[in-house]
Amino acid sequence: MSGSVRTGRYAVSEGALRGFRWGRLVRLARRLVNVTDQRFVNIKPMTGNWLAIGVMASAIGYGMILGGQWKPFLDSVSSAFGFGIESIQINGLMEANSEEIADRIDVGLHTSLLMLNAENARARIAEIPWVADVEVKKVYPDKLIVNLTERHAFALWQEDGQLKVVDQTGAVMTSILEPQHGSLPLVVGAGANQHVKEAVALIDAQPALKPRIKAAQFIAGRRWNLVTEDGVEIRLPEEKPEVALAKVADLDRTKRLLDRDILAIDMRDADRILIKLSDAAFAQRQEMLKSRAKKRASDT
Image 1 (spheres, rainbow, N blue to C red):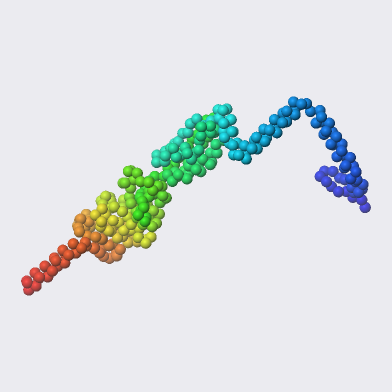
Image 2 (image 1 turned 90 degrees about the vertical axis):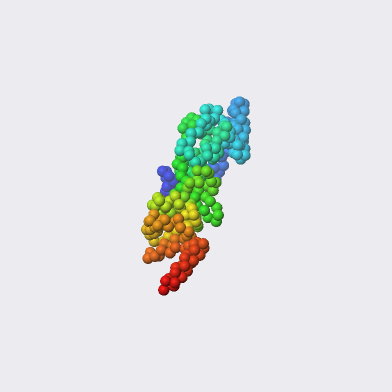
């Protein structure tokens, strides 16, 4: 029973396939070569020159690609046609340096807007610690717009003796301190930057004490000690530190507690307050107790 083999949309009989001879293929190849030779003979001399120029241009282009010179070349060409970057507009700039941003964009004398990779420029600018978000837009034919959202300095973080400026998320912005950073709240200790909002909120809740607080120390990753300008240490509990600090504020208002010669106020026990006296205050208190004891003895 005869059949057929499907190849695409045509059917070829099995008999035809069996009758195929390689001689036919050879004769067909010879005809193709002869026709091709004839075509090349009829090509005009000028056409050959253009072919040579094309081959040379291709070689030059390939060499430029290998040598990394293709981008400057295309930059120059497109700049000559009016697409050179004439201005860069930076919006939202407060803390970041405009020169650093321009360096990250990498704009040269002949850089064209067509060849500039805006996404790469955006990624490089986003690496600047002060920058929270950035958008780079091309405005043809010759303008570049950079829209910045900057991080805001929120506090100073000290760890291992080194000070760094952090934002409210605790992200490090810089280790170079400027005069305006001197008024920022100070948190100290490993991991303190990750809880900086908590410490600042705790201090802000007591405006009468706030001017007297010099730093907030993060202890064992669990709780805070507040240190006053006079060196008094306020040891707060892990649970409800705001309640304990409110008690200290009340005692300072009514008893002027922080004006006394003390070293520490321990608020970690909810049922009592422990006050550590300075050596001089302790010696003075001991003398006072001895004097009272003598007076009582003489009275009896």
